[in-house]
Amino acid sequence: MEEKTLMVEDALKPAQYRVYPDTPLAEVVDLMVRHEVRVVPVVGEQYEVLGIITSGDALDRVLNERPAAPGSEELFARDVMTRAVLCVSEDQPLVEAANTMVNRDVEQLPVVRDGEFIGFVTRDTILRTLHEGATPTSREEESHS
Image (cartoon, rainbow, N blue to C red; front, side):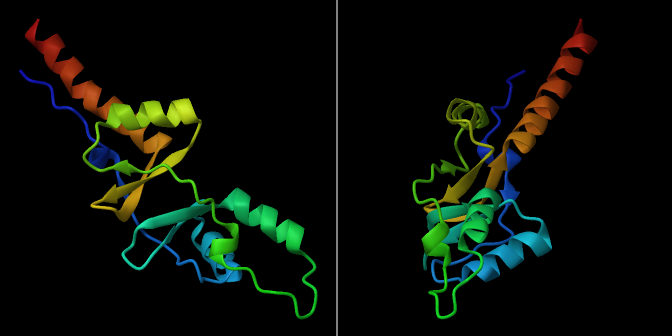
């Protein structure tokens, strides 16, 4: 029996939220807090990933910007986002994405389809998918012996 190669799409957490470069940081933080979101992608007009804002990025800015001086410039997503973002494709082998995450020490990666952001893979979803993918095969082998 041929074993199916697990792909990134098998562990994909579909996009729930995204913001644009001109989204005020206050709105981004509100979204993160209300929906318990740890990372928000910043996308362009074609939904391409321009950057990400993590809860750590947002917290750092919130702490360093308070108290806001009267007349101070409002911060936007583009002012806070991490621009150098490694993305993976939905049709990439899951093991490759997992190795990238371990080697780069990242918790999650944006997933793109034809350059458009569609969701994330996280260490948790990859671990669960790899475990569940390996479990039925192991049981089948045991029942055939």
